[in-house]
Image (cartoon, rainbow over all chains, first blue to last red; front, side, top):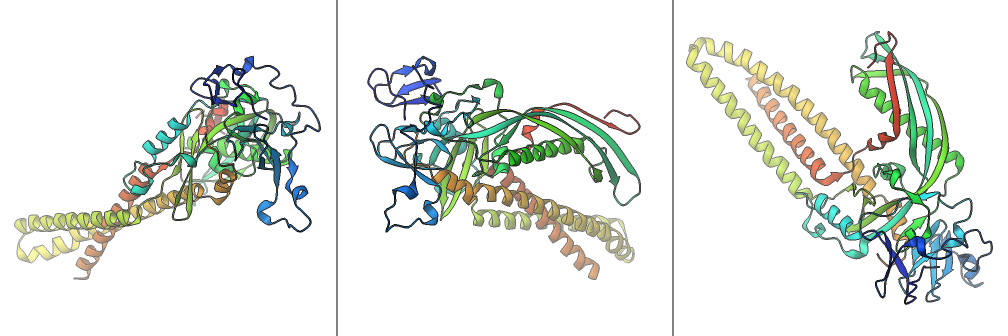
Length: 412
Length: 56
């Protein structure tokens, strides 16, 4: 089902720049709230648009392959074409006519979101943000500088919100000493967001935060027009577990920042958490996928604030040549410094004394300093590279790619 | 002589390490976006005291 223009009858789509529905044919702008009976058929059972399990559409000679699993066939209300939707999609696009299709029967009483944060960032803005921030980097290969429009999809992600409190008594120990410190901490949570779509990596979607929930509005399917969306598909038990884990992680990271010494080890911790689910909200995100020699890179843009998440690919030869070039330069600089120091000492001491003073003392000091700085620099660089590779792994996640790729071909 | 050789090795290691760190920093700044921990805005009334009651 899609929402049609009251003037010409063509499908309408939600446009963030107008905060209204815009007709794809005549360009009429309509306030979503003025459309009659927008939500009247939410709770209808046995709706004619109920997606049909794909297994029911196969003939007796056809078999269900792994790729077809969890797919449903939905008939487009505009052209009658058969659209395949996954088990949790509530809005998609018809692959034949491109009109928005909302599977209303999926938005049952239990699954109906309470609120929605509409897209504020347009597709063009999302693309330019990624091009400007991520793809303009020095090491990004030239073939990535432009994003093809067919790679961009606006998707509403389902989240649960939780309120509650946490308290903990933590014992920390400094290094190998017996000296320990005990801290009592407590905090409350308001609108703790827990992503409840099993197809997306929770850590990746958490990077999209923060969202301003004060800008949320009561859920209306008009905001789904022109975008893709999913309903929640995690069990209450899993959602509860995720919320407690997130609350604990946030709280412990805050506690950690306040401990007097960062090298302290936590030796005991027993957090008490009480969280209550307060809402179910759909939050907007742009998913931008680019392929690099068979590896998909999916960048995310917060559809409300424009925050960009992702790690762009880098040109290995440029990185290696720059590292080698800088190494050679700094080696030359260090040796030049050593030589000039040697000459300085040579001018002030006699030939006989020089070996004692220069070779033994100066060289020992320089050598120790060099070794220490080498170890520290290599260790810190290693940590940075490890994080960088971890971030790139999230950006190239096959799960996220499949989540985006499954959508129909039409684009906003 | 051994000391001089060790000095050379140490300086090469330090230079390479610093170059490695410098490039890693540029890469992280220019190629990676999306910092963690920004969801802490949902945490309110945070309090932390140590056992001898010194507020931190």
